[in-house]
Image (tube, rainbow, N blue to C red; front, side, top):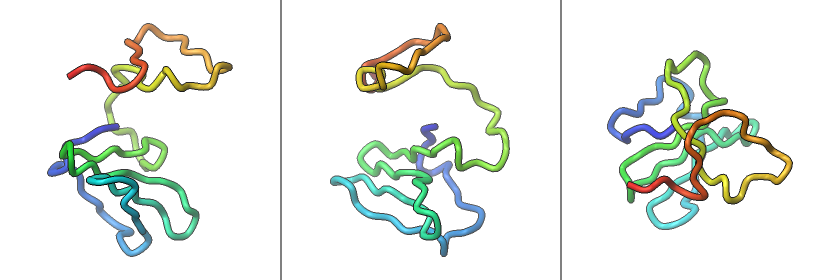
Length: 91
């Protein structure tokens, strides 16, 4: 789930996070205890990409598209009618 960086706020657990710069302008943040990826900060785009599985409650949003389907596993079947994009959707 992509959110504008100014709207993103950690409410607890900051001390349990670690991060690394995976490329210029991109920092990937993960749990120091289990190693799970939680979110990535994209300074170049001004957004935070949150891994939905890391949320404790329903974010009250639904998916609007499938992205990066050009590299999805061949055995994974997308069964809904949402738009599909090989990479990022056009701006």
